[in-house]
Length: 491
Image (cartoon, rainbow, N blue to C red; front, top):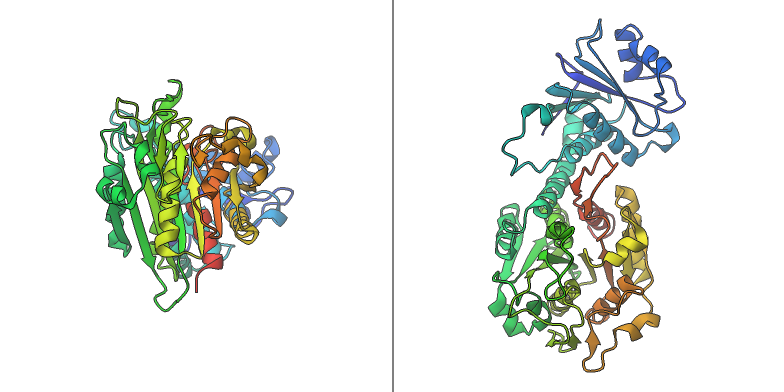
């Protein structure tokens, strides 16, 4: 998608303008209403368009205007018009005309600031995402016609400058969405590691550890998950040293990267199993974050670590009742092989705190179906041993519209994961399943300020109404973590 900042709409492009709820047409909307001989006002009077958030009204073939289409986009109440409302409106403008046949869309926000114009372009980049890599027979009329988006602003140069860091974040979100969208026969652990390695071109330092190296480290918890797969497991370590003068310890981000999860011997039901290609959504968020930090040259030292495995059933697969030894030395009784993500994270968390001595650790994982039962599909859950860190994460989530809810991390549930033959068992059953999973992970944190983000509800969206995050892979976590870093950890 080509985004361009211009002084005014030109040519037979489709034009979109914003209208506010309970307010007369003003600014660009009033200008285009006058140019069209009052067509927008008459259309509003004849219908149900009120300017509410998410509404759109598209007219075409109007006399007196060169625009092929004229779209009125609801921006909501004027008092609620913040960055997120602007993003929603800009992405909605693209969505309203993307299938119209118009090749160019001009979103006229010439009455807004250059920074707001840049954010409108950012929203279109995210809202226009499609994963069409494997579609070969789709008819042209089934594809979006809009290929070029102009943002009309009073200061195109300033808008272009403000757009650069936002464009870097958009690139990172798209990279993460592509990772989650790929089928698992393409994105297996080895290929995933190669794609991480490709980010060295941005300035990241990327190290890939294979099974030989992880065996020497004693990472029996991670390695047991991939025993049943013919694909070798990997751990990828990505470092961004953007503040070479800083003596502070880095911030560490850890992601679960199960490239496909059959459940192993505790095999999942067939219905819906195809969705388990997105069980690496937490790792994609971490990779996307590192992409964003490097892309916008963030002044921070950060490390991203992802454990990449494939959970398959065969004669060599880990079995319920088996006991494995983690890198920490703690033994784990595997009660259910479908509770595998926490086994991966256990060793990566320990490795991260042992090697890098981070000031904070944050892990992301599509960890439990119980999180979906608890919160539905609009919120992810935040578990933390540090109230300050939890507060910073939730604050960042509100600013970017990636919703997060604080969850309890209480020893009252510890008894559920006590094992009769090992130090801990990997699941405590259905009651409080997300809580007991977080308590399991906490045993491998070793006292470092830490948060666990269970993003099972939000990594893959179906029937979404959010125009900035279309159907499918959401890239959830990239923007949240980037904002967290920008607000709190950059020099």
